[in-house]
Length: 268
Image: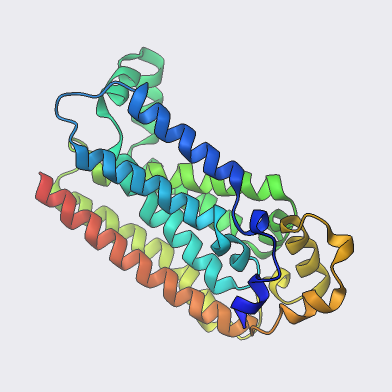
């Protein structure tokens, strides 16, 4: 069913060329302009590129359009953007740049405060839960630039969230596991609310008028699309989608924190 629906969209709608160019630009800067230390290995570069690819898949591929049709796919996007891409990018980033930034007096203080475990976790939780308040979420999804602004804020806060785990000098191995467990506990209510909700929490996935307005952002010319087409895009039960999305997100939390902590402990 979904394959048939996606066939109706233009190639430029399913694949975001702007995000692709941004990812390519970031890769060029990474390889040709940023200096690397002698300890920087090729597999760190591979991890960084993998992080860029994950971001592209999450917000610039057909997955992004599908995420406007199915909430469960939106949850998969969250897993990729917040739980998979940031650890890859942090691990693969060139530490020589980070050291230079930290050498700047004012920047050193800002980075030191923002990357404190309590501060980093608090920022992420506030941004994440604020974005998913139903009326804020519905409002943000109706504006293309506002939605990307929230996604950027979520991504940057996720980078802060993961930094204490991947930093080699902030927390001990045991403290990293405790930090991860605390964040799993803090994110669990979101999954529980979705899991036990008996009504659709987000009208943008059930109200035909809001749904049309949100999906119109992905369509180059809305006037040529009959209303019957939008109605055909709502065959998915919003309650089931929330239940499925809660499972995707919760499993993603457990797996990502476990793997990253395990690999981080091996490094130390």
